[in-house]
Image (tube, rainbow, N blue to C red):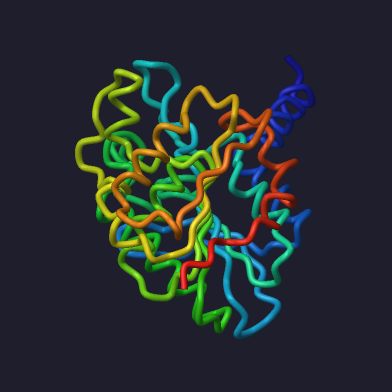
Length: 271
């Protein structure tokens, strides 16, 4: 094989790597890239802060490529289809910050704590939640924002709720195919429990006064409506929480096209 062909193939692989895909999406949306240390992890972020003092919209990525198959764990959880980043790229607000989950898009040399439990059974551990919350603090300070709306996709939905439960500056939560009760979810799919992870449903009452919408795809075979309904049943207050089914959407396909429309749904008024 010639050197030119080797270089061509190498460049082709690199152009389709998760990192290059994320960078392309962020550049097209005018988002700046950075890596910020929060607690135990250095997290990849993309952001634009164009209106100092205005509320900041935080987007949290899903679990990514955690598993290669039902029994094979991925060596790198960076998502090839970063749904939350696609949504952040369509965000019309002027203060937007996307935060990847621990060990996504960042060199493991910078993250000595990046071991497979943090994208498998410890994906919602205390140290993960603390890391994300610390990075949110950095973004909030840089944007000079006082209030936050937090949006999370899939496992990022669980992180959105768990982060919100320990903060007093969140005025709204939106989840997209959110894993809002992983205990119910793992039982339904008959997979190993997420031992070592916090469960969003366990803090449902604590966040029940925060206006929130939880979107579920009508064709989502991974995260059915029953997960959000379990969360709602534990909240104790239902006037602040809406569950909306979005027709024709699967777990990871269709959200990008629907997002501009879904953002026009006003958060519940629970005053």
